[in-house]
Length: 639
Image 1 (cartoon, rainbow, N blue to C red):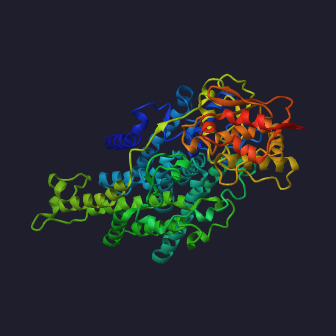
Image 2: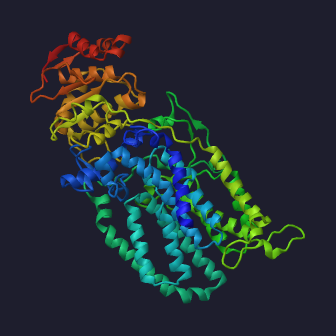
Image 3: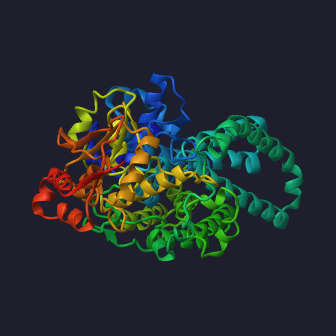
């Protein structure tokens, strides 16, 4: 009964977070059909397509055509998207994403609650700990961008449970718990390999701390326990190796595998220590809004790593109050170390690991998600201890204030000082965090240009489409357009992680890379915009041939936010017209070129003429005028 009530409360809270989705159209509403949400939507769509078309779940050329994308090397989450394939088939990838984003905090909260029930006797203590963990600032921040792979933190508490059984309690069969631990590692790999790596680091640090504590306090305990622990850990490692050998190899050494350095400036991604206690200022909507770029159009504080003064006070006071509980010291030490890692390369804990292969690609501030688990464990233990602390009203019978042997409370215990103290700690820890949130999430219809729902839905499945904005820029909305269209056609650009370039690129590869950079800059960059020079046109033509492009599409959505339409639709139209040498067709409010077998001559215009063709209020409202102007102001030359 208690489990069902807890699950129901967590689910009601999760639905409230996403009320903007579930009260409208969950098949076509999200935080945005752009930015990071587009990547997540595409990864949600792929398994359903792969299963019905007999293609690999680990690789696709439907995006980043023709090179393709390696799913394990990217931020895919097959352990979520694959079970939700039936939802995708019936209602589309946006609906699947909304289901996953709604259930993510519920699953994490129930997992943490289950772990705390192992150590607590008062169910509200375990419930409150699950509430904090499942709806933590880290989870809320990731859910605002629908990063379900980082918000679905259901596995880490179960890893702690298995390790507690293997290393501490040792009441069950070691090999059976080892199988469970190895299976959980495999499951987490297919949710987020980055979170798995962080959990492995934290588990290693925790094991070292546990061994050191035993050496100091009870060396004989190591002699009694080592065999059970080693058997379980060896079975766990063997199970994980068997299950993950191929997918892990594929991610690193397979086609389009993981690059040596995913984020060149990852050392700057750490949290600021001040955000542990104070939420950062909200990033409101506007032309320079950070969150809009990543796919959130609401007003929201950046909360990664935030614990708040209230939670911090509860943890510190509780540690001092119940200092005889060694679990509090153990998880407190882990919390400090892992929070230190989240601060990035400027702090000493991360310097011990940031040079290791693959580990160096972890984004440091994401360690906050693992640290929140240790904070939740301490929080639950402290609240439970407070409930059983024996604090009493002056002159009252102490026995009447205590829980019974079965763990239930006597009638007067509900209002006992100990119970009131426990509830006060819950309020002190959770209320400041709840106040910092700006909920429910801001949602909006998933904008898909009409061409992709009408003409694009009828093109041959062999078509390869080049879109503007270019999907390999920060503006990845075309990945949503393709996913909503059931991945009917292949797309140039896309993905979330770019593989290492060839060690010795050919002239053609260098030219194509330059064109991709030009298109990205035109979409969302800050460099100079193209001016239709012969060199730009020649590079674009070569890239279109190398990429196998059959159709070029520029939606004309002047009223859309910049995060959806790029820097300048008129410049994009003029640039493509000059290179392709022909005026586009206007279909379903989009400018469309069918790439011919033989290109017409390049249209050469002067820089001044190109600028004149692409500026002015008339051109902004009617981008086709830019194409007409380029053709009028130009003369042909050999392709």
